[in-house]
Length: 452
Image (cartoon, rainbow, N blue to C red; front, side):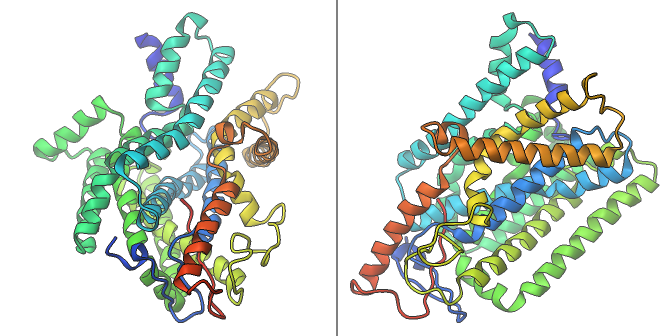
């Protein structure tokens, strides 16, 4: 059993290297002067852009990782910059979960039941699929299938580690939500969270052995891998939740300062790349220089997410400004029109399934490419990355596009965004109608939809 676990630890990258008082809750709708108005509740269509961008970057990062970038300074530089996807995913998760609870509150038990079932069923289904794949393609005997299954259920198969972290977040979210509602000292909370994240990053990356606390950081990692530990990512979840509490102010801020936010995000990106290169020039190996837990990676995760969120806001504003009424709120293609096949909205509906399935497809493509029949093991690495990326995305999009039309759409594809949008926007429209005395929305008002 221990031998199997050691093999799986190396392959799966458990060290993280590879692998009601508020205006919204009370139902008011306020604007920022731009003609874009927040509804009392809704599906956050704006973050569809974030979903697609992060998902595409995850597949791209794995395309580099599957090409074996050991010692490749240029390839590992791309991996270093793409590490932001972890932070972006967890910030987005904190945002949508918290906003949903603000606008459509549930009991603690109701929250846990919905979240654990909604994510847990696809997690178990894909865990079983990956276990079967592991047994068929590795030297681990079928007598060890129970050990492999139990291992993956605890730690998650490769990319499924994010679900393990989400499970931990869901567990403590009611306490976090209560804290954020009980106090407006959100800047202080965020500052403490950032200090904790940076301390952990410094201790893990530089190993300075800062007293008892520094020693405990390593002890915790021995008990529960930091790559699967909520403490590693708590800053991102807290940041996302705080954004949910201040979404109106943030959208108003972006109205005037979006170019500066993009410039700031780019500056952090340049600093991150420069830091990586300085480490390389100083003799540091590529694996250490690209460490996902180092402090600069934490700052880049926040900076890159801010940039993508701003681009998402710009995309949403361009497609919704001037669209009045409730009809077609879920589609950027216009009132009452279905989303085009390769629109952001349509792709966002597939991102859950793409994320869950893409590692299977990239594994199959690599096996075929590196086989004796194809003989692609010696292709230049940029060509290999391109093959992995285009092939994996094409296969995953085709697969999920079929799955969402079957009864397995939720089991294998994750939360069904189209159904969520239709249901949540219907509730939002009804609430908006009541707020306006049963009439239509005021002329020029547009709903921001926020996804549960």
